[in-house]
Image 1 (tube, rainbow, N blue to C red):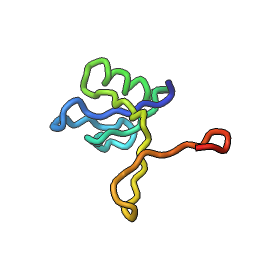
Image 2: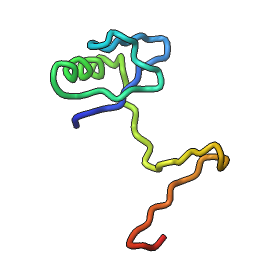
Image 3: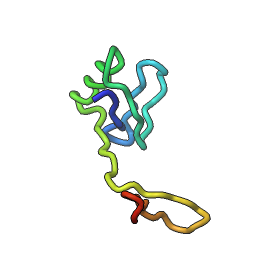
Length: 80
């Protein structure tokens, strides 16, 4: 696990990035889990000041010109 998507455990909690010193977005951000910065984020996870965001398994494509979002279609072996 080299990277992880995390967000503050509650919307009113301010958790600062150790490198940039900016607050972590409530929508979540991707952070490294290696090196000194990774140690910092693992400590925040352990003390429960941040939580991991699970990635959506179903990719959704959004195109305003075509209307509402729709699921992507994948082609396998030239067939749909």
